[in-house]
Length: 125
Ligand SMILES: [Zn+2]
Image 1 (tube, helix red, strand yellow):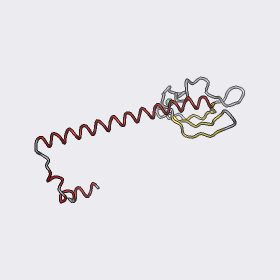
Image 2: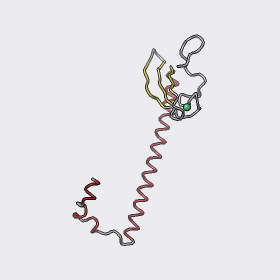
Image 3: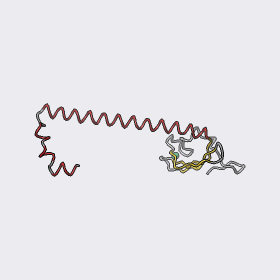
């Protein structure tokens, strides 16, 4: 917890945003918990995943709104990366399957009911 000389809790005026770690400048600070105080203030507990700093702060609604925008942008970026990864993986699987079909390594018999009941397939279910 940071305190200014008057003894009041700081609102982190030196930080560029709540997402920035005051210890190591990482832009990946994550929220742990929050609670509303009187109008216009929010108690936040934050964590830096890079240096493990724990931060307790009283933030303004504007700081929290800006932080939420950054978190939303980050979440969107992770989702886009995940979607891209899944699409690339599916393309690779389709390519392998296409090659296997071309080389006649896979046929209709591979999908016959008896094969799908094999112990190996049952274990995968
Ligand atoms: Zn840090």
